[in-house]
Image 1 (cartoon, rainbow, N blue to C red):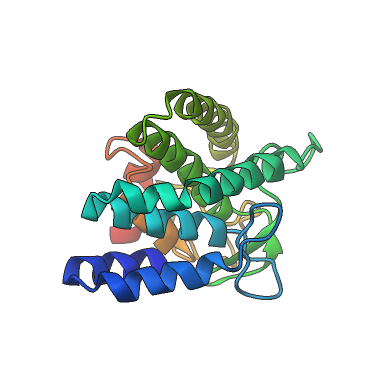
Image 2: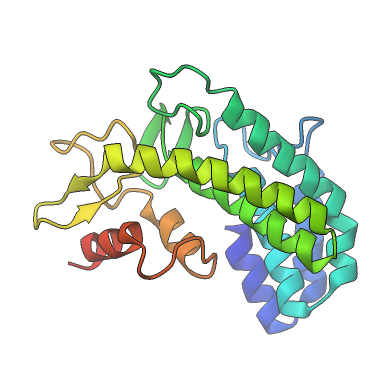
Length: 219
């Protein structure tokens, strides 16, 4: 919840509390670049949420200097995402080229191939491309845009495979890749998708995934 809390604190003008929270979270970044706060370490989205929280704060405040303080740590985080998705190299795996199996939270149980870590990994690379450009690191920005495009292609391919129809005929993308329509709930863990639609802006409002998911959630 740090992106939401950090955004709220920033809007309220309590920058000190927001930044204290960020600094404490980033103390948990390991040598690989991954941020691991919760244990066991099966929740893979924490690195993405840590980057988003600081980046959104700096855009709201316009404080480039604060972003500069985190830039090297952001780069390590992006390297971890790129290496993590490359580690899923079994072409038969549902999450091939995406992210390792993890815990979704939000009602999806177990360590499974799932999309919350994919969404946050994609968003992290998108944020890195934007942050690099904002700080005039244009070569870095192009590198992260290319990494994002490659990741997104793998995601879109998997999404086409995993689309489902709900009871009212709305197409949607479940969070769990091995989704069982007889026992799994379509809305489970979709709060992650909602945040990354807005304010994350990972999806355009005309994106078929956004249109289908919101139709499912609101119908």
